[in-house]
Length: 229
Image: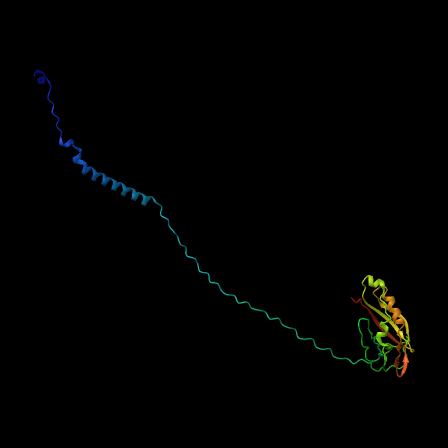
């Protein structure tokens, strides 16, 4: 009993000011208000601190394009020259007769027709060179081309070398129809030139006639050599 008396008796009492729960609502509202104020201040700072971009639009001057019409310069054609005035000149020149050389072709690949008789010549006298080139009736080959063809022998050298072409022979048909002075004007070689001379030398013609008499006539004969496959 004595011990209980000696111990002090303490009683714990809480003051209502020390209870924080009474201030919870006030603190929460105050915090929200402070947070809103801070957010609003931050938003205003961002808007004021951001640089404002200014887009400047410059007015462009309108340039008018004027269409240039191209003009075409017309060329002036000079007038044609005046024809010369004919001047009478006394005719003192003597026009000589022109003799035309007519070639008769001997084609061993086929028959050829002889040219028609030439027109009548006014020249009656024999030329200085001793033969005519063109007469009233040209010489005609006796027997035709077939008889001459049977006499042709193709040279072996030309056959081996496959030489083909024409040999041009020029000669004189005398008053008796014989061949005189055969000459190769253009040959092909390979023995064809010599064979053409040999065949032409054996040919006989009806002599050419001038004013009803036989005359010497120059005659050209292209001899054709062709290898038949």
